[in-house]
Image (cartoon, rainbow, N blue to C red; front, side, top):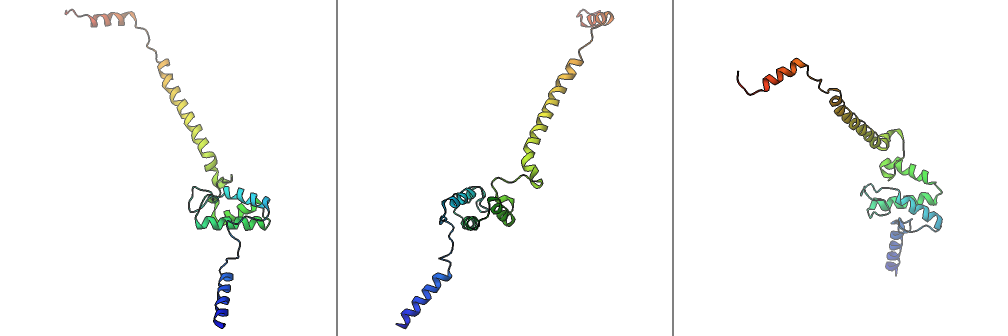
Length: 159
């Protein structure tokens, strides 16, 4: 009887100590509004392991931990921006699928437009220069003396 009681106590302590009763990553929140917010946030966060997937689509262990953290923060009353700030501070801006516009990533946001504008400007200048000299350097008509000399050179009869 003592052995059975000891085994039951050890099993109970093992279950309680292992975190089996802790907040789970995939358990929905009791409040449907908070759960909808958490799911929306899951779709806006990148899995650092998978890198191309949102944490809602990833099966990586880290993504599960991130889903749990998001649900805990939402349940605690944090705003969406507070959750993003918390995770950005820990994992960097890379975790955001839509990075924020700030001076450190202006190149990311405005670089493609700048490259496009420079490319169009370069193409315009190339076409303009290509056409310009041809129109400006039209041959001047030959004078009468030049025409006679050309005719004498182009004749085939030997002298």
